[in-house]
Length: 472
Image 1 (spheres, rainbow, N blue to C red):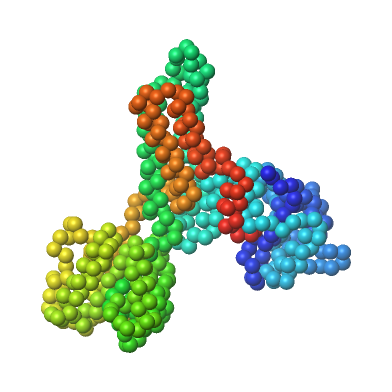
Image 2 (image 1 turned 90 degrees about the vertical axis):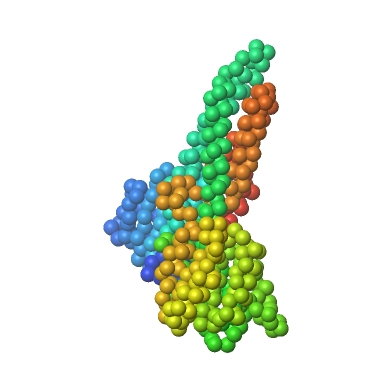
């Protein structure tokens, strides 16, 4: 499957910058680079040691394109496992394209998306889960997603799966051996040890599968819906959280006609705040669409912030607020609900305490709602709100550096492997024949292999690496 052509691509983001890096990989990478590179010291690039850097010029006949630094990495000690050359040139888009076009004329081929990492996988420099972690690392935009990607790229997940697969493979070999001596009715695989192994594998698989729930939101950001009546300060709160004027703020009710999303990192955890249209009865068609979207966003959110304008509270309006709270809790009973009393800076202390008492839940041990007071305009209570949001995130596994699954392909393979392992457990408890258990064991091994790439196909690789950026 390994393509022998020498590939080239821009390895840094497109556009003008201080420098740009053009990467080549393949059997002819060094010889092609030698044809266009003139060292200032007169060195022959093809005769230089691996992991060395050389100053010179990119030239064609008498034309000089740029002064560059050329880094040489000889196989197998390179990212791809092939000869690799990286040309650091000035970041003009014109210079970048001129050098790439020159290399293409000298016999290189433009790299496809993810082709460098694909070659690293095919040459055994990375397994498939590590290769996928490269893309996650590039796209990580907060400490949590970065930590998870680094742990996976360093092989934490792969090692755990590989160890389980090897132990299962050892027993599978003994089961196969029993089939060869079926007429003699002998057991080479100790059934007690086998049961212990299968139980342990089931436990690990369930832990990894359960980690996907937290891993997926940590990777993509935890969605938080900001809901409430029109003009209670939702857009002002969003601006206070983000510390910028992201949303339009107006005294006119119904200003927000669509959902507004933005991201904020709190202590390394990404949150996606969604400022929604206010919930109220309206005949305005556009605003009605916005309110419909509000409920859709609550459905998607992990946490709901119900914002209440405390300056407008009264004996008459409190029942309506309580109805709104119960409406959200009844429709979404599992979601954490934070009731945020806004504009408390304009209330006297007695009135505020009265409202807090009436809105507090009577069953704090069974109801996952919380009550917080803030002034979004004055930016008071914002830090307490941020800490409350963090309390809803289970970061224990992240702090303990445990393996966390974030990839839906891995999640699917783990589910299928667990199903096969449970079949093996049933077979052991039911004293099924070795030949029947061998089928389920082989399937479990197959799904383990799918994760690390020991079992793969062109279509799977195409789907994975199509999501990479060109140059990586």
